[in-house]
Image (tube, rainbow, N blue to C red; front, side, top):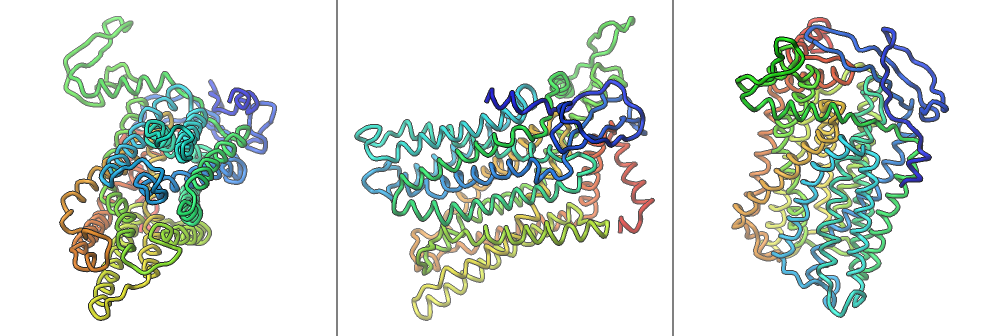
Length: 587
């Protein structure tokens, strides 16, 4: 790591004390620390209505084609790391319960495995908070990613060693397995998933290449889908015959991810940390909620405490506080991620339940080599195809016409497809029941292609825009923490609600995976419940006020990225001015 740190060069953001007004676009010089082949854009931050203070001028270094120049290494790391994580998730239950090797396993009961996986996911969703603070405050994104992939690799080595019979003792070594599969691997993957998305987005210029963020976040989910195909058709099938080979390949895959990430070290655009600014942001956060205000004394040399109601404005220097105004605005942007992500929480719940429900539906069906778990590859293929359609046809066509789909409408489309996914499952359930009643036969697992394909559209209309708006809204110095907050709400809190739903609807589930028990169960009620939740969520995003609010979030977030310290009121005025000046675009 020290060697790569030495050779990668200084390619972080440099701060300029003064710069002429306007924009200068100039070729980069490799000798000045700028990545080879990149260009620099410098601009003076100027005042607009509602702004009280200026931030330092920054120089951003960027590539004209970031995906080909630097992001390709990160996408490769995402691909191979996701292969390992998918393979571990798909095979963990069978490995621990002895399905793959009855003579060498941990001897866990299904309930024990469920608790094991729940704790593992909790670690994966909680640790990114601390990692985000460390990345933004101390070590930066580059070293955080290098650490978490290494942690993931060590965890998989532990897991693979326990899969070899009698290598670590005469009985299965549960302690070493827990360190690998319960602690190190989930922590490594959870941090990696959160930080790497932000690091990829930072390879793009925040103004000139803003429109490309939509494409790159879709590309990330295409990599996820490709990883799903490989893990579902390779690792999940090989483990049926040899556990050690399957886990060895999974370990090698995360090792390749580490090599791929380090290979691009000299080409990454690495943003420097702003420790003082972050500490002031945290001070503003805690000061906002206490009934104390710091006001300057008569001489203006120090501050004294005064009783005051909680609120943001009291912390601003323009209102007599001691925190610069743009720091308080950063805090507002960060906290706005909470209601925004909470609005997407119902869709996260609906999405989180599709894998177990599709596997439960597939188990009583007729299948060959492609069983319930490997069959999910159909969804992965569909995500890749739909992703290419969106990236190479729909979005470029809309950009040429100088238009785009509103973010709220994308979420509404996603909710529609989520609901249609469960409607197709209801139709398949009815078909299974009719065939069983008439002939007692099973239907083919090929029927599951329909919900898998429909779901692909929903995934790509929800998650890439969700990550994109989170990235834009989060302040420059807190983007990693902003993404960690969004992931925790979407998957952490969403997972807790999913668990509560499953416990409350336990009576609807079949007692076994036999066809007779499945068609006589009330599982269809759960599907209707999820359909209603998806459609209700989609209806919310069609409300004009919600659409306008999300457009305002985009403007409010971009104002900070573009170099303006805009208050909430100024962002609203900017949105109204845009509507008056461009009525056709608004329509």
